Length: 126
Image (cartoon, rainbow, N blue to C red; front, side, top):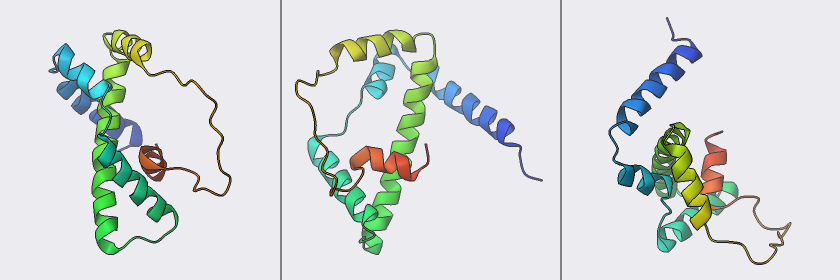
């Protein structure tokens, strides 16, 4: 007999809460504000484009799928951190310290629709 979606969702929520509840404020902030290094982001972008264009080698597909799992886990932890009462403070501070976009961005209609972490999250249907 399979679990009901609501039940598995509650179990996942409890698991995440058991992890996040042990974080120090510094640990929570680190995960909530984490950004990958530039070289890692460049590789993620490259793999996302190859995935979008269906041009991955089997090794790249394995690498991409592993990264997707890690990104998914980090996104779930980040969401859990930011939905806790203390998370509102972290979110407010992160927003205050976020870089401001000074100029408008024009999207190239010929470019792949998504890149990097956004493409991975789209692949995971989050």
